[in-house]
Length: 377
Image (tube, rainbow, N blue to C red):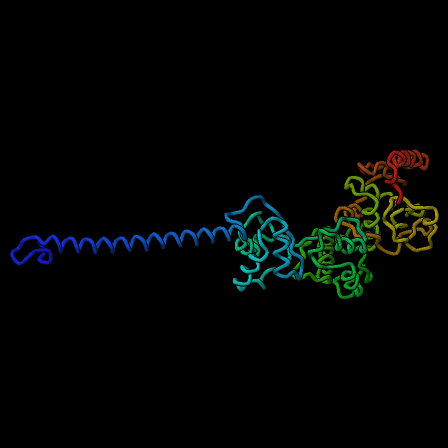
């Protein structure tokens, strides 16, 4: 037995033992109160934090895919607002705090981003920094589109994130000599701005995009042996591109394009004017209709093939590979006329005689009457 709790004669001192026990109990009770109070304070503080956090931020891994667009030059606050309005984050303020605390807010770039809805602000910010979540800036120029309409495409809402305007493209095209045009382009961009889908760099530069288009034309021309093919047909490479530009503007079907090519060659060889509405559209710079008026067909422009025989001075659109191949490989036919009789299906009919062509034209007119507003602007 511990001497502390016994008398001198070795007997247990209950008074001392009781006093010690009461003291120990008091200490334990005090500790319990402190621990309990601390836990109570912690619980309340944690509840307050969670309440604040959930009021200002989402928790978890998010749900439902969503694509957002951050325009060039957007501030952190503007980006936060875009994310909040898209349902990605709960609070612009929280996002701004996360971005500021990270020290990487200057790394955010314009573009389309694939995110999720209801993300914590920190997760959303991290995803914006990850290049895997960026959808590359792309622009598509359809085959047979003239240069000015390509530039108009840059101003469509879907392409606004690229940041190039019609004026930017027009200014970049002002000096064609800075681009790798083939000699037979005669310093002209029309016809050599190859139609395709292009990835636009960051930051977007109009002259870089035009140079890429011209370079792509050169690659395709080399692949299909354009110059050799022109020589075999007894025409110039420029004639091939001009023919292809008319083909691309007139019909989109790869099946019909070689037939249109042969019609063009047949009419030129017969000394007939081409009388292609697409050349009149180019002459008057109007593309909101598939037909032309009697007045437009009298326009004195050298591009008007109702007034002038032979090829127009140069391409009237930017043809793609299929139209270029058609110009190099015309079909074997004696057709001199063609007309697309159904604009929905693209069905095109060919004729060797004027009488046959007039019957086809009547079919087209009937379609136009049944589809008001589709054939004229």
